[in-house]
Image (cartoon, rainbow, N blue to C red):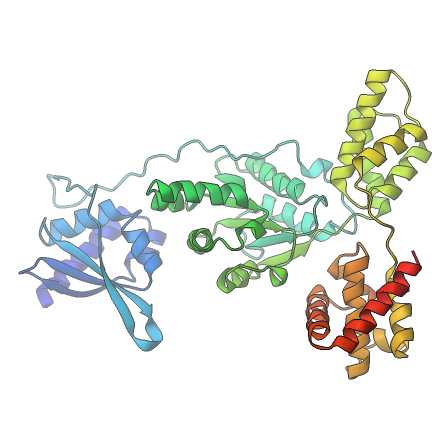
Length: 464
């Protein structure tokens, strides 16, 4: 056994000489020598996880086999003992695949340092029109914008890794993601930055799997310095794609690479996503992009007017900001339509034209009630004071009213969960999500309560 141990120590020395210090510490030092059978020419190595095995038998395959064949026998078979359940001492043995790992003939006693081929040119897929300069700041986006800019200027910091941005459609998530990526490429041109939608990521993984190139797919993504994935919620229900992303996520974060994700909902509201991914989404910072209020909509509209050289009367600006329902995407469409109308018809923009364009652009929704209306009706229904609802009391009857208000506000207003929580006694979005779940459960099991909620909704419809 002493001889085999000596041989393995020589292998480790070869590995250390041919990879960088971080790779050696991460992927080679944790390997445990178990045994070597000279008769069967089998080398058994223990590794911590299946992911370890995939890395050694994928990205480092050529190096591993060259080192082993040189120090043992050129026909040595490598078996990996993978610890699948360390707590109960459960493991399985898997044979490596030496395909394409040809033995290199060296004249000296040491392996030559393995030179990595230079990273291929990478299309970052960023829309460089989306920049911080034209991402107008307001109360609804100040936190994610500030953190995004901090990451862009120092992508090596780890405090906000991953950065998880969430918000409803049209509030500017895609703009912010691209602004972060674009700024990083400007400040650090050599960084490998990639922006990709979750749908495209899934398609790429499926294509790679069908063509038996799954390892290549994972290895490519593990070379990225800043990975930006939009609409991450679309990975829900995609078990195999989630597993691939899990490996990529772990590798990037372990190696100090930045991960930025965007979703239309917070992790707590995601269904069909593995718990271990949801946990990792919360490791860094979660920041909500709320719908812009009228003041911010006005700033955005004025900015787009200056950009396009438009002259829009104040009454038109007021009308637009009051009717876009907090959608930056709708604002963009309206400005483009106004500009096209002015050019094609050679006419000035007026309120009548704006009204026509807004009606065509903005998907009109039935007029909704306010959270004040909901609070008033609920408190009357159960004879509870609004002061109690907004207080910190945990009395069962008050909690019931409070949760019902949150549930109805989520159904009948355009307020974000964070905003609802703030308006109902300064609570956070997680409390609101919990309240919504509780109300739905109670309605499903208590017909009398469901009838009360239905009656409240009937009264609210009468207030529209």
